[in-house]
Image (cartoon, rainbow, N blue to C red; front, side, top):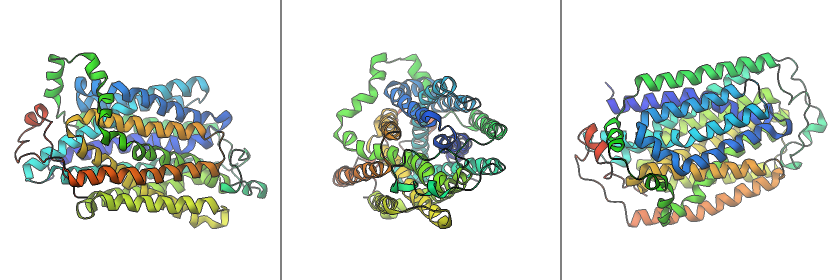
Length: 464
């Protein structure tokens, strides 16, 4: 029999799998499907700009008032609204629903991270283990299931759009503009990149809406409300609004948080590149839009598998070795993409790049989340709100210059942020190695109620 805490982790993971099967599929297609006047990329920019705004104040307020469970459910509804906006995409439908999604994005991820941290410490207390080891395992399980959403969402899009017989051959003159050989801003809008038949778009978006609603139902029905008493206590003894509102910014007084900003922003930059630039300037340009789903499925599969493995390996290798592997994988891919000239006959290469990028992204996602839970155990909501805010800023900057910078310069920017991350992250890790956050005493979390009323003591020492 699995433990109750593991059951809750699985419920959260399956809920996110269902939700991001829809959103991830739509995000991968925005730069190609809604390419007119850059509307798709603009909608993604609005989403992450809204996440920045919501990160400033919404996560602590919603989590402390509603609890993690109902914060997740309410935020999921915002994502479903964006799917509805894609039924009839236009500036007046995509932009408002993008704002709605963005406002729900930060509370969703902050609540998820807080929930997994609480569950991990509760289970560690029962088993007499270090909290950081169980939290690492739980995040690995979560991202293993969650990252597979890229497989299912893109499989749906590829199978449905593959029925469109109008998607045909790619002319040689377009192939000359693919990759970093050309600026990449003028990828031809021809038979390979035009929108599929409207009926097929409606079929796909309708399916995405269905799985999004299913995600809300799964979490609402099956997830335990483990911090219900804490939320009730907060509502009964409400802190001043300004105190909760400024919790995210107060944490920036900690030099470790400031030093982690490049690492967190790089997560946004690299995800933007694979979802926006790689799919448009390499896959869609050289193979056609119907191949985007298959290539991103490969990304999702490698991401999912490596998320699970990194959660297991971290206890033996430590975070630093895994981060070094991710940095090496991304560095190698960036250099290769600068010189690669994609052509349809090189089909396996498209999947190799997406698989390698999936390996790196799995490490960035799992280990950065665990790093935040390790360094800021007493300010979980504010810490994860900062994580969402700075990661989203990376998304916004990358999407903002997407429409006017040449692909070559985008790759150089990505490389520069990666190198900066490689300098700043080791400083924080070395300090944590020399001055580890003190572990709690055994038995500190003997029950749900105790962890809800005393979350300040969290086992968080992690081997470098």
